[in-house]
Length: 358
Image (cartoon, rainbow, N blue to C red; front, side, top):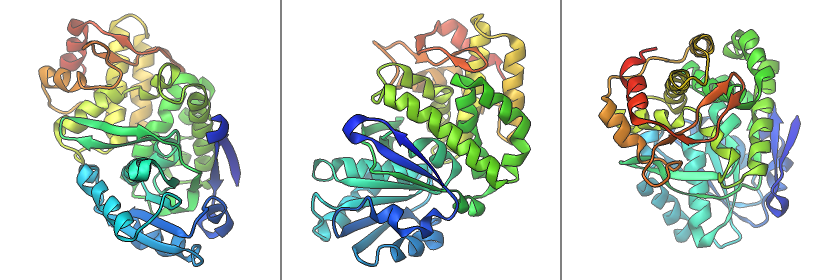
């Protein structure tokens, strides 16, 4: 087992990475400080792993809420079901919420924990690669709105993150590739050595070689933990973690939540960001082609959906990085080096939106 620390002073917490961690009861119970536990999961993950988690909690009062799977269900309506359960069972401020699932469950569970009685403890047990390398770490919690992804949320850190690599054995291939999109992101924004490793070891990740997956998860979490420790609330450097996300979120919202997996939309969005970087003279065209090829190797889409530039721009204007109505995006200066968010000329942005086709 590998253990990393997200260093946030009195709110620091560990990330545990390894095989069969759900069988290590003490990892979980060490971070629970009252008898009341609520497990939030979805209807895909719960049949696989809910019993295993609850068996580790025989000394606790355990209730659960099962939400429908899918990004389209990441809503206030579903979060309200979590609040209903907490209130109906008279759970106190000392209760602990466990988010057992992928990024949707983690975001919703964390948001519910942040809001209930102004904050209760929660634990992340991510069951997808994307959640293990990205969304479970850093304390971003949120739900979607029809007009924008993740626009209703809070920064709220978990007690710990338990990334059991064994659960990835039941992950569909499409979900695995979606997670690799976020892994590639870390290499592109700040870790060129890791990017080189990915280019050499992509096949090992796609075939789920245990050592390769564990290394990719650890390296990704190290990168994210370092950034979050420096900039918890995204006032500076943390924004580079959003490479490809301004475009990607527009795709998810514009095409309907769930049409594209988050990682698929981010893959396309990152290629669009690379194209824009190239048009602005920041990135050589040869590097843009390398980026596209790496995403293709990961079995991810690089071609944007048919959506008008006007619709893209309208959706991109609802983004948390924007300032005074100006669209700001993360661009690349080189392979392994991202630039802080910057406003872009609408004319050049429109060229990317209309001319880039993968």
